[in-house]
Image 1 (cartoon, rainbow, N blue to C red):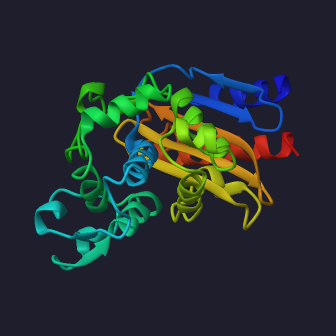
Image 2: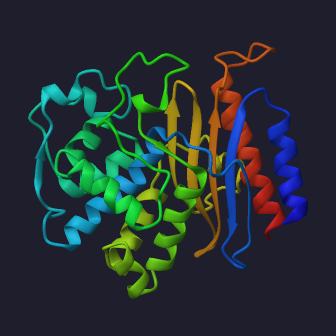
Length: 280
């Protein structure tokens, strides 16, 4: 792990932007990281905690996965991610499908549908209750046109450590009822959450350089300040490691003219591949 940490740090040191990350070896419990406790914009990585809190409300009987949800025109205004911004208003989908699209296409119409059925104070309390002390949900979705140097108070914020912790607790909860209960869910709901994440359509970060068909349960994020991805990488059916990656202060264009976001994407992919090769 020391050699891997040095390799990943060297990759980050090549860049003119900040990179905060944490990697957890699920076979040994060892972890390495860089700036993992720094509070940064969460972008859409926040949606993993939204999904799991919603599933805890399902488990409590307060919500139903079959509950019909209507796509309303008001929800489509100012939305910049996902596909339901283009769908005909009045379309009805079950809450389960809103959760799926919130994760796999990062759909912000569906995110609003889910968040309107939750209480934000309760969501933040749930995060604190499971140990995500650096995570704060502030708005249903960020306003369009945020400047590159916006403050943390304009968006949801988190840490690389918090996101890795949530994923680890989901992995443990998938096979242990007591661990699942600590999240307010069941092993079946933990497995559903991981399955939904494994259906991810946005594959340009953690999965991008891994062998084809590698199971990766991940959630990406895009914001004016950077690119993010958090995920569980599997070998076969077994969860092998967790990578939580947050770039910040990424320039619009690099010195060579390449888009900064594309360079951040590639860096994340290279880090995941280095971990894959080291943790064979």
